[in-house]
Amino acid sequence: MKRFVAKVAYDGTGYFGFQRQPAPTATVQRALERAIERVTGQQIAVLAAGRTDTGVHALGQTIAFDADWNHSESDLLRAINAELPMDIALQELWKQDGFHPRFDALWRQYVYRVTTPPARNPLLNDRAWQLVGQSIDLGALQDAAALCLGEHDFAAFGTAPQEGSVNTVREVFRSRWDVEKNDQGCFYIYRVRATAFLYHMVRRMVGTMVQVGIGKIDLEEFEEILLSRDIQRAKVLAPAMGLTLEAVGYPLPTEQATISRRSCELATEAELE
Picture (cartoon, rainbow, N blue to C red):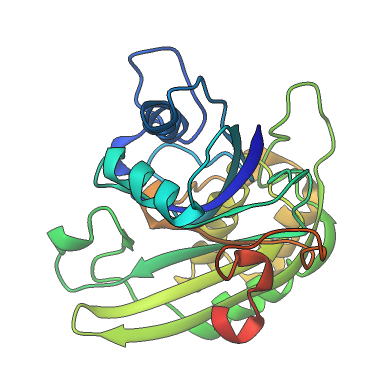
């Protein structure tokens, strides 16, 4: 058996999250395992860097699976993609013995998109949180985001995703809002990178920061909520459709590892800007 690693992109709109659930519930993990099993003829268990929620998307989800395969990695990538539904696709695939997408990860990075159109745009229904007609103070968003940098107990914004765990401390390396404009309007883009995330952590952070940006609460109250560790105070959970798992970072591969294409382990800050 060989261990294969892949970077996966998916539109999470039609799925009840990544993690496998009892049939016939549609999940990304179930779709991946079924496609790989059809190609290899073997029962497959897919490991992942993290579990995205219902409706959340991914550009850089990292998975791993074990299989017997005597052809090239490029052949395996093409064969699996031919079996996957159109809203899921492997972007890269390589062999790497001993790799674990969750335990080897150094960080995860999410991006969240908010837009303020004059009227609802149906083409953005599954891609951004539309705050129709709202005015947002970018400076206020950036100030709130800066308060999240560093190591904090983020219990006010989420719960531990592992059953039985009570650890809600996470270290955030990047927390920043920017503005992008295109032919569909003005978008407020939040990027956050951390060692790991709590359940609903990014969506509650975004929901509360937007409250600062539209003047519902001030920066001091945002900081009080963060320090309170009281999840009841973070009342706004941003919708899932605006959230995308953008990238997962890993140590540089060892000399023994076989990399069939440039992997996400070699991603640089310049590539993510």
